[in-house]
Length: 117
Image 1 (cartoon, rainbow, N blue to C red):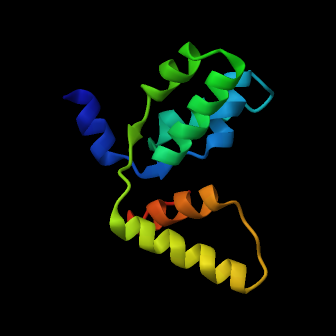
Image 2 (image 1 turned 180 degrees about the vertical axis):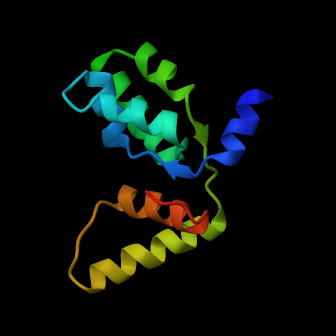
C-alpha cells in the first residue's frame, strides 16, 4: 500500500528500451535507470518488453531481463494507441523522415496516455 501511494504521487514516465539495455549491459550510463526509478513512476510498453526479451533470447541470458521488468508497470496497447502510432508513422514517412516502426508504436502508446518518453 505504501508503494501504491508513492506511485500515485510521482509523475509517470515511459522508459526507453535503450536506458534499460544500458543498465543490463552495465555500461557507463547504467546509473540513469536508478535515478529515474527513484524519481518517477516508471512504465514500459509491450514493444519495450518485446525488445528486451528478444535481446535476452538472442544472447541466451533471460533472467536479468525478467528481473528488471519486475520494476516497471506495463502500459496496455489499445486500438486508440494503434491509430495514433499509424498516424505518426504515416506523417513522418510522408515528410521523408524515417523512424523505426517500433518507435512510432511506442510514441503512439505514450501520447494516448499523455506520457513523456
